[in-house]
Amino acid sequence: VIRTALHNMDREAREHYSVVIQAKDMAGQVGGLSGSTTVNITLTDVNDNPPRFPQKHYQLYVPESAQVGSAVGKIKANDADTGSNADMTYSIINGDGIGIFSISTDKETREGILSLKKPLNYEKKKSYTLTIEGANTHLDFRFSHLGPFKDATMLKIIVGDVDEPPLFSMPSYVMEVYENAKIGTVVGTVLAQDPDSANSLVRYFIDHSGEDDRVFNIDANSGTIRTTKVLDREETPWYNITVAASENDNPGLLSHVTVGIRVLDVNDNPPELAREYDIVVCENSKPGQVIHTISATDKDDFANGPRFNFFLDERLSINPNFTLKDNEDNTASILTRRRRFSRTIQDVYYLPIMISDGGIPSLSSSSTLTVRVCACERDGRVRTCHAEAFLSSAGLSTGALIAILLCVVILLAIVVLFITLRRSKKEPLIISEEDVRENVVTYDDEGGGEEDTEAFDITALRNPSAAEELKYRRDIRPEVKLTPRHQTLSTLESIDVQEFIKQKLAEADLDPSVPPYDSLQTYAYEGQRSEAGSISSLDSATTQSDQDYHYLGDWGPEFKKLAELYGEIESERTT
Image (cartoon, rainbow, N blue to C red; front, top):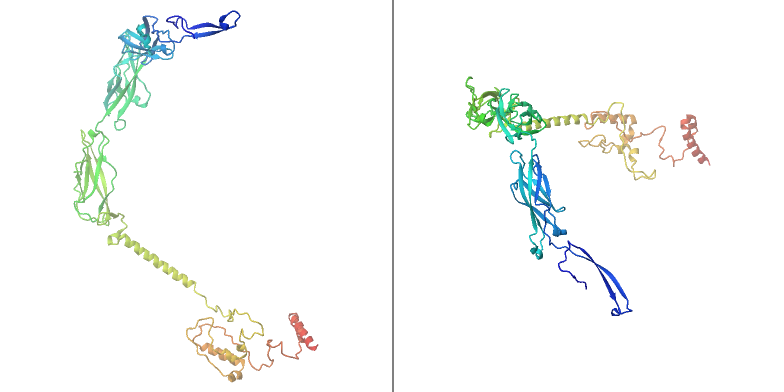
């Protein structure tokens, strides 16, 4: 166990100690062994030392041109302690410059930073005195008996004289001038003085940074501002210019001030209609009916504008169609004087009116209103204003006109369709006398050859009487039923083919059911008692014949194949 041997050890006097410790065995007797070590001891710090300023009086020089908010000096009190025990704060506790200066603490350097709160003026006050105090932040009450842990010093601040720029009498100026004033009219005067004791002369000029500044000029010696152009409030009601001032002895030192110039209104604009009006009067209007309400506007200020007065030009004769009523609220109503208007007689009317404002002196202007005559519904809605639409006045509404037009379109469509159908009508079966065709009957049945006698009845080909049975024309659809004409077999066999055809031709000509054009009728009648016999080959396969077919070889190459065919048949018969 290591214990302190001194009372009130002071770290600030000595911070580090070294102690050598030896250990022996055999209770320290002769012949025993020993070992030693060194122990380093460091004293920790406590806040037992108050801060102390090195001097009781300080002096600081500050020029009067110092900017507000800038640091003008530093001051520091010493504290023998370390770490947080040496932390302190600075404050101004007394002095005539307590409202001009302020002090803050730099925690890293533990310095007091003196700053300027208000601008200095050497001509008004040349020096200030401040009492500055530095006090510890963290106190240890075990050592409070050592005295107060703070200290104070006195700081004297001397204000240095600096050549300053001229100072304007006001931070900004507002001036007024009437519009339309003559060039050279005085707008106002600015004033600046040298704040130094030398009181040098001041010169003025306008800082031409914009086009607005060129409307005015300023007297360099007196600071009087005048106009250089005729002003128009309706074009530019306000101007902002910047005036600069400098000393004759030191032109480089400048000061600036803003001057606002308000342009006052003069009644120089007559009133006019607020907009272009489209006025409509219905044909069925009644006398005294309000057809429209108009209003006016004025480019001048409110004092020289409303209230507006509306009236008709007294120099003109009384208008028999319309009149004007002033509503005394800056509006006027257009009224009709008579009953009913007609577009066929006159579709446009013109009404000259006058408008005056409330300015001094009062200004007036004339305008002409255009009134169109239109056809209206009963509820007053405008139906049409076109002069060409006179059908509407005859009692036909828009819906009726559309219905009529639709009917005309449908009728035209029907006529076109009828003409198209007539052009596409079916051509007659017999086009010309040369175009003669047989009536062909098509069957979908496929026969089984000559042995098949059920698929088709060939009796009609052999028996002419079968052809006389009831038959209908295939080229037309008969409307009346023809009465079949029967003839006995003996009668048919007793006439020859030529007479038979003539008879059938006469019957066809006298038949009222046939069409009024020639047609070809075929009959399955081969004739009777031909001297050459039958030329049909239907029974040639089974009939024995001794006819010689060698003459077919003399008919030429067209019958060569037929000759060879019958030649083979003949050879088979001989064998």
